Amino acid sequence: MLLKSKIQFIIEIDRLKQVLRQSLVIAQDEAGSSRRENTAEHSWHLATSVLVLASHSNEKLDLLKALKMALIHDIVEIDAGDTYVYDESGNETKKEREQKAAQRLFSIIMPPLGDELKALWREFELGRSSEAKFVAAVDRLLPLIANTMTGGHSWKKHQIRAEQVYQKCQVIASGSDELGDYAAELIESATRAGLLLES
Image (cartoon, rainbow, N blue to C red; front, side):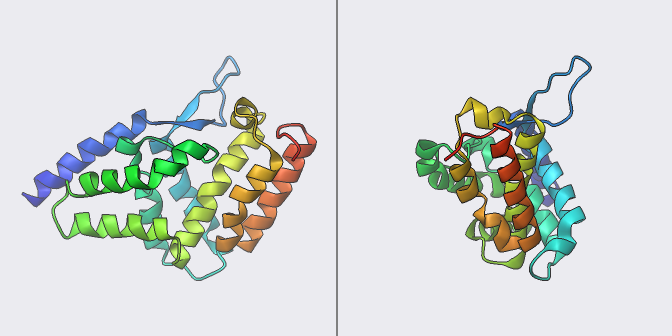
């Protein structure tokens, strides 16, 4: 029974591959064009980036816990969809939509594993532990890098101002001062290059 619930969960989370984000993938095809990243790709990229950047955390990390958190942090988007960080109206209902999704998705796996995964997701959302702070920092850094590497694609599309990006990227320094400084440099450079509207 427990094995069947795990298999059912594995099948269900495959749907994350269909949830599209605003960021483009950095790599281009042979014609020089790109496509939107999906949330499953983002979760893999985040976990790998957490592994690579872990030594830059402000606090000591339980790396396995941080990797688990990175892999499951956006599973709720299967039901709730991806809410663009600068979408004010979408963010008003995000918490409620995601909590409902977490209840359904993590209950697919029988306890204790389903409860453990849900607790990790909740810990990430609360953002208080060293792992949650660092994963959130890298999670916010990746779209910043993607935008700078793709000509400010989603920033230009949504007419985002530098001030908005600075505000949303403050969370990066909470997890890593070094990554926070790097993010500030990227934002300054992107503003000078015209990828962001000046505040």
